[in-house]
Length: 252
Image 1: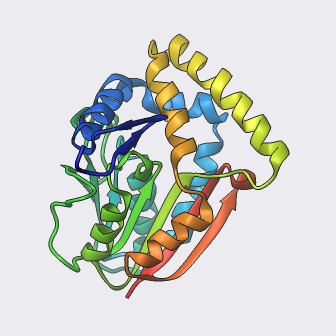
Image 2 (image 1 turned 180 degrees about the horizontal axis):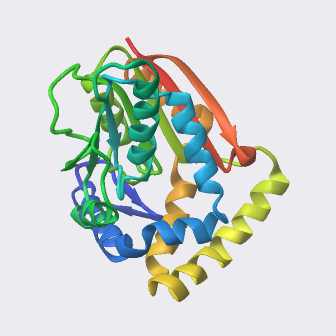
């Protein structure tokens, strides 16, 4: 293999193969994706996403990319928040662009309904279908660990952001205590694949999702990757003791 291997769960695979493998996982789980998120996290993922949206603080007239936006639950938050601000003080409509590599996830999102501010596109996080310096904010929630080349996706985020634009990445991370890590490992490897099998009929897909979390860089390493991609003011906020983390930065 001439290229550095890509991670697919605990496996190392040819980088050319990873996108298809990940697409297969999400093709299979798209219809039950939101339900599974609620079951796996006890609904806590909604609090993490609400906190991320509050940190973004969408404003009227802004263009926001929801990358790896899947079924659009983050984009709906952004649209409604911007509209509430617009109702109070006026301004142009916000625009929220949902981009996801998986057409099945986009289709599932469209079936759930769309907000007036939302647009949908099938596209690759490593090569977004957008011109340079065209958006005010870029958000990716629970998607970057599925990208073949994380550094390339970060550089692409920087490319499409205007100078001073906001970058937010919500992702599973590392619990900050050994006790919490042990409890989280036990839950993840024993319970989540079982839920996947019983509810979505796909144990293998959820085994991959658990493994992909373990292979993702920890908070410190990921923050360094963001800085290396050309961002400034990199900051990390841990949620639920580091089970998830929000990385924020500014384009420079």
